[in-house]
Image (cartoon, rainbow, N blue to C red; front, side, top):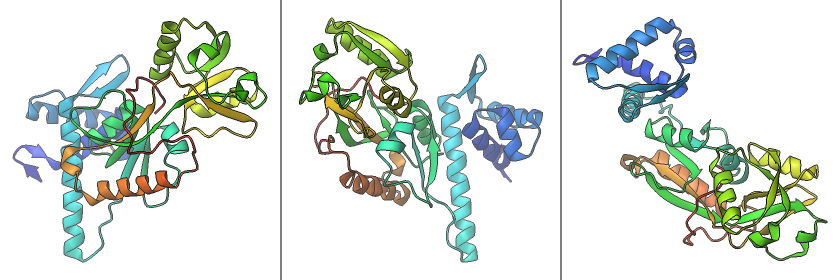
Length: 306
């Protein structure tokens, strides 16, 4: 079938490529050769007159036009599927899709994860890309800058806390300031991550000396290192420490705000509103005691884990 010169087969193939950002993996899923997929994507780009992806070394990324094309392709596929289901008298097969990072799934969305929801795991950039391309109906992430092309809904705001063994001297304090971290050996994220950048900036501004104990990607590994006595860690307040560890709020660090994001055209879509309703219910029932009411206005947030 052709929409003018626009092939629906090429659109569907591009949507798979947009999922993987890899010609190798996309071609395998489509059961075609890589050269054949290259041809489909190149011809689609030529017909539209815009580049659909860029290459940065070995990494591929969609252009804004590529994101729009992928979203259009998925929307078209969903409409065709719904039409065929209606004609055949069958129930629609589509399920809601949620994108979020490791930290959000582990500490924020546990009450939402269930069969019947397609889960997409990725960092902040991949979560936003999944929403922009239509791969995900809703994304959840820590945001410091609100995306101008997506609708962002505040879910909850959390303080930043220091995680330490229960017998650590600072565990006797009701709350802490950055000055209390002077001389601390910290388990920190890699240096390019937003949480590490903001934490270093805050410590430097407060003239607080510290040392790096070890770099850890993700809160679970950071907590593991703290449990082993390697060092202390600054994490988001929604993180529930394992037995033997405690958290204390660092009152002069800004709060961490988690947002749900969706495409503006999907504001009234049941797939979006249903997921949002489930997430809000789960947050109200969450065991985390350090969570302020989600209706509060959080402080500007330059750090945190997705």
